[in-house]
Length: 340
Image (cartoon, rainbow, N blue to C red):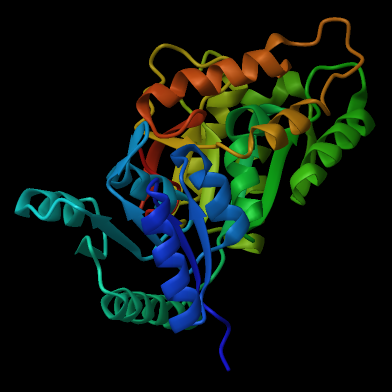
């Protein structure tokens, strides 16, 4: 017997939520999680790992249609059924344009509900079984803590989804702890999410002019064959950051998705066009940042929890959820880095 389908029902009406849960668990042997608060959706999708999501449209403080983007960020390709008491054609068109797989009008009969869930969840499992199931993620930074500051939350989400995550740092940086200190800090930070670390020892003051950068990145890319690469933006005052950006673009021409994160010296020309929700992963990001420069008298502000949270909170104005990390998308043929 196959594993029961795992279904999340996002519904603030307790009677409808109970009906859906009862029907699916008894008629189709599903495991159903009901959620009334839209703010809990992101963490629930990652923790519960559903085969399918059912959502109402009108929810407290949010639209079910907006949540589709959040859900697909975390689980690309997951089927979503939209249910609503409004039977108008406009609602149906809007739902389908928001990439819902089905639009159902309440009240929904138990037979219809079971039929739609069975069909869509079965198709999704078959599709997942026949294609690549996990992403191979490579995040490239010039100095220790660059990657963790820029995409620490996104990497935590990747790791939680079972993706392979590697952090390539090209120099020890300019702190007094040397290569051993840089390795200790970087490996502890990566350990927070179970990532792999590759640390090179190009002197920080020589990084921007080093001919080794592109060759190092090329070797790592050839070995890992990443499907997603995150790196520095060219819109940055730090010459090392710009050098890593240039070398990354030269060596990742065959990578499906390449995105640039906000560096610690980003300029006003940093123009993100995607804002990835990291709700549920801010604690992981803060734990990663906490591994760097813990005993330094001049610990940078950008490593402090309140600074990191305020930055992510500010970017959420343009995305979904309460906290976001911004990206400049260079290439995205697979649409796997999330969307606003």
